[in-house]
Image (cartoon, rainbow, N blue to C red; front, top):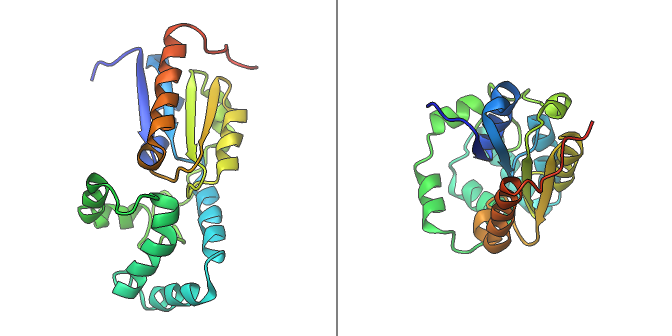
Length: 209
């Protein structure tokens, strides 16, 4: 695309792509923004299963029954996932904003199931082993790492990413979830704009060794 000296923003899977791009082509970047994404799929899986274990036993029973049957579209399963996972950790607004609901309705399940799997809690798709903890020190452009307080990504994982990425800033958004740009909208965009302004003004720290 001929882009150079630009800010790259990635949310969720886009955050994975952003990390991969930065590891290969960071000479083209002015800044990197990783929104609500950990540096490791195994880390995500471990945490989302911790969240699952906090659910009431009867809800876990519903999930296990339909997962054993491979029936992820059963109304009872969908309702349990929405009420006990999505409304707590994906987006805490009720009802959801229309664009988010529309995105879920039109999600390409073939691509999703190839890369992840129908079961939210057990990733066996082709990115199941993706892990970049050991490579984050190589990203030396200014980097903003955003995470929601109630995210399905472990906030301590994002803080660890900040420790490993030499020129990074971590912002944990109080009250926010995985879609913090909706349910913690004001601090989310304030943090993003402040990051860009600080980079432009040369106020971002030099890389740590």
